[in-house]
Length: 324
Ligand SMILES: Cc1cc2nc3c(=O)[nH]c(=O)nc-3n(C[C@H](O)[C@H](O)[C@H](O)COP(=O)(O)O)c2cc1C
Image 1 (cartoon, rainbow, N blue to C red):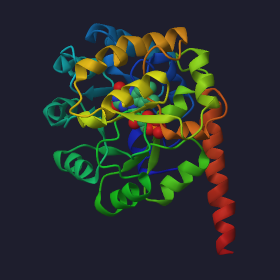
Image 2 (image 1 turned 90 degrees about the vertical axis):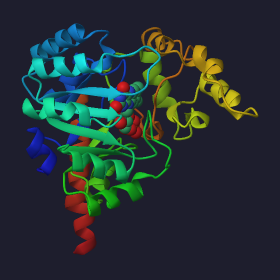
Image 3 (image 1 turned 180 degrees about the horizontal axis):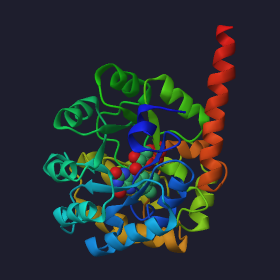
């Protein structure tokens, strides 16, 4: 498949692995890139900018294909030296960056000067248009189905993607709720130039998380995600385990939610430990509704090849036959 995404990013298939805190390390990014997609190293998973530089070098040892770095600019309990991370990305020679969270405008001049293509991930058309206006090269449109932060508008990709196709001039990726070839074909039909997947790539051989977490996601249905932090207007879609249920229970109490009441339950360090020790109720982890479509743990190569083959079959046979 040739699309504006494959052309601009220099990749074989229009499939991107979105940044994922604690998951997007060099092994996963390299596996996705080697399979012809675009792998993304998650910048802030590395504790310091120096560690990020080393992680990028490790990824280069594992692939000679393009890969990107994600820079997520969100409010955090501990201040993050974003400027230093951005400088490191430039110094590393990486040529594609995925930004998310806040407006990436302050970092665009340095990225542009270094010839870096910027993909901004956003959850609304107004933010996508803003990203186009300030000079981003591409956007990832994250629908309400997605894992992580879907925003507060609750608009699904069925609406967001055709709107993006009507209004944007720059290429865009459909993100959220995609896990198979049907999703890819549908996204292309709705005007996207490719897809971005998070949850589906978590459940692959190369994702650096405990087998029990992957198996729990294989066993899950589309009803097994929860929206937390709604009361704080910082909504996150996570896997519905006992901790997520406890958080929702606290948020449902009368009166405003005090983050202090949630802090211990949602601590990032617990989510990270859960990924390594497989204790499924230790903390929270991001997951999208697409868990309902996941029923195996393939390698990234198997997954990407299968998705592309399925989508091609749908386009070539199923859709063509309807016209014949
Ligand atoms: C475990 C996990 C962690 C994530 N962490 C981040 C992150 O740090 N920054 C970011 O921009 N997106 C993050 N995301 C969102 C993904 O990049 C992607 O936008 C989203 O997963 C797409 O929806 P899907 O899961 O339905 O494919 C995360 C997703 C998951 C599943």
